[in-house]
Image (cartoon, rainbow over all chains, first blue to last red; front, side):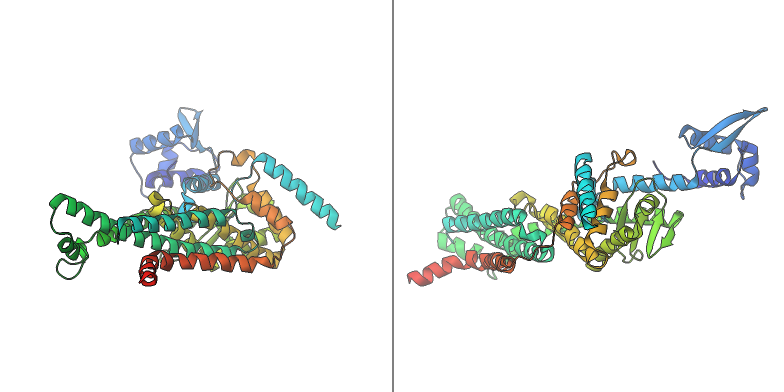
Length: 119
Length: 312
């Protein structure tokens, strides 16, 4: 997943801060520098195709709403960026790698034994 | 130098490198003294890498001369005078210089490539940190995330060093466990472990065709973790660190498929749960390996001259 483009990001900001779903016209009205209706609907539909927006029929128009919060978006970007890091040359030093389920189980038991023994 | 002598010397250097690699990789004492183990690996890399390159250079020179003699059939003494270097033809003509240049070029190539990938990763993460909603808690940056993770980016021209912890990790860890994580990452930054890992990786990639110290980079990655664990466990205790490691590394629904280097986490926890060992034989063994390692280059290169001197 790539981060949003400039217009995508501005549209998402508006939809994230809105409490309810917005129509395309309402989104355009809230933009600082307005864009053509066709431009807005193209980008909004692209965001919907990517799964970032849902729409609901409301009278004659569709209302669009964000599927995930801004913080979930940031979290997804960050964990995907981390997945892509090739850390063999020490780009960042991660605290821990993954244990297998077996290892985790045995280590938890060892910790529990140790702590019950200490008391 | 005769071809046979050069080959024998090369064999000695390569065998020593192979033996040291195996010995250091399997040695038990490194767990108790990761700092000394790291120093020994670096010494071995410089000494053995250097001696193999030096002997290899002599060998290349000999092979070149031999081939030229066969091809042209000119007088051997004349040919030798020409290829042994000297001012007439300049150093660039000798096989030695070619080999050394090739080695340097390979190292520059690998260093440039590794720099590009690490810089790209760091830049991307810094961008995300600067754009996202980051809370600074106790000197580390807490970022929203469903998976528990923690890492550090060293500072430099592109920004200050940062210790990053996911909100999920912050939620799962107790205060003393979080302190252990932060102390561990601080140790990485203070000891400049990023640079150590980088240098070892570039060395290993450069000499990988010769199989000199093939485990160097992987062992350095392991040992810097052990060293940082020791630093972190001193102020906060071994058990909180062990608990933090298990919490952060345990597989969960959220972490399935999360790519991570094959790891030393299991070993690290086990190590924290054992009593710290004080092995008196440790220092002797380290000194022995260091002496052997340091003796290999002068021995391999000086042996023929010594042989002649003693013979005469």
